[in-house]
Length: 522
Image (cartoon, rainbow, N blue to C red; front, side, top):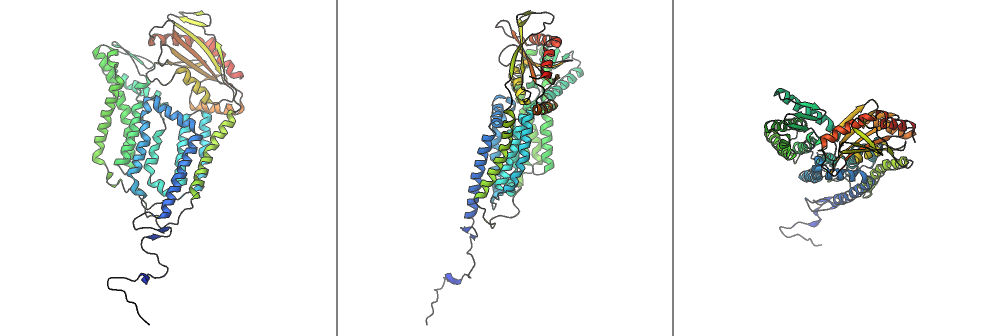
């Protein structure tokens, strides 16, 4: 019998006890120390592929919402910053990539059941005709998809970029009238304090130097929305305390509103001292952005001494790694993505079923009552250098308010935030009018439902949604167009005066006819 003895400086390969694993191995497979286990890599690959497929299906199901958002980003200066939201969200995720160390996806297919509530919320918003609500519902499905496919711990680690996607939705337009009122109030308070003679007619302010209009562009919505998006980014990167972040967001909302009012007052005062409203208003939007940039810079400088960015890379990091967790079946991410996408498709399918019974809209000519100073010439009214025509759009009783709202936007040509607005309220009508985009003249619209004049608020939309279920009353939209008789440059203030006179004169004519058609249905 002989004995083999290893040379000095060497070890026996057989000295490892039976049943143990060498260093650097896991249950999922053998790896080098410090590298990602094979099972974890496969889990990430299948989860990311499932996430991409889920996003593609949701994009196809909600293509109308995506297209509407992109069109708003492209056409409205108030939302042009939305193009930066997705790159910034990706950057937020990249700066927080250390939080994913040791984590692996843990799909949660069961949470897809929450999509039933999301589908119902989307359908309600579709019936009410609120596109922003539909888009927020879609964003909710994106968040749900991430949770179902990646799991709670990864979503918690990446909460900041996921929440920042909120600014992809072009929201806030409903606040424009309120912002206009606040701006007008600040101007009037300033003029009274300085004892400058002025006259206010709606949103029009007249001083000896000329006339100023608090148009939608002067409301400060573009400044407010951009400030909120920037404030959220600043708060997420520079502060860790929830209270400090909330304070930053409160300042991002309040300061632009006050600053915009001071800016508008400054333009009016400049016109007063120059003796010309036109001279003061030249490039006021450009100057407004310069002023806004200075205000944001001051807010940034004011917040720097209180920053808490030292722990940015570790905030939200996992309490313990998942490296030793059992591997996830490759089919689970695809099951989770399929369930969420299927839940998302329920809303559009239900809406398509309801809209299948909607009859086409009827467009009918209408006759206008001539106010003092106007005369009827065939189907038109001639008022000085202007001509007016009218039409009625009678919708199916089962149509939801989104169809009428879209027709209203087409008639008014909304999208020009420099337009001159006009509201005319009479006992039987609620008219909205505004100058048209790219051409002289004005358009005015009024809506009726169930024999009553209605506006465009949530209450009206709820009544229309309920009416669409049993279909007894036909929504009616009356459209009045005022155009110059010749190819002359339009005079907005003159057009505004004639349009107001024409709309007020329709109490015994167009307004009564619209109410009657609305009550009797089609």
